[in-house]
Length: 168
Image 1: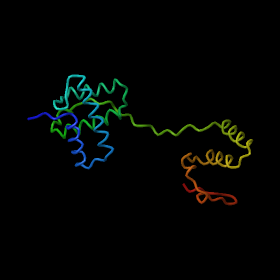
Image 2: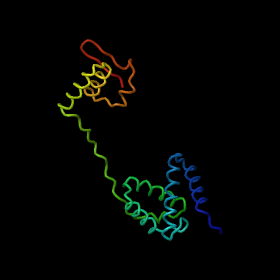
Image 3: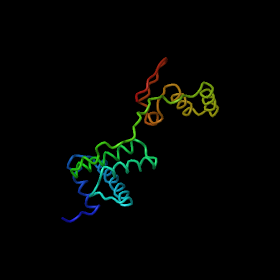
Image 4: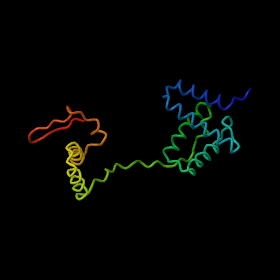
């Protein structure tokens, strides 16, 4: 039986992923991972056609040593896992040690101190630009994001005598 080139193996893998309903972006990322893995294997005496569990574990360790984040490494591993399933050799991904992903902590961004807020408002009012004064007050007093502020239309802002509202 004739050995397939790396390009052909990756193309066949992409076709397999497409048949499984994977998105174009996922297929692109998985192909990129396989290309990286294949290049690494070539420099370390291995090939995609003769993968071993040791190859996979050493590649994971290589990614760690290059400073890749745990989530990046896990994404790369997901591509290799799919490739192993594609090649009917799922045993090569058994018991692979992966770095632990630490969940992001939901910490609110630090707000300005009272003196910082007052200085900002003072400086904006010195310029006497009503638009800038409105923007600074809206940002400081509502907690609205800059992207939300930029997307506002006049019809989104309702101002009454003693109250008001903003539709985001």
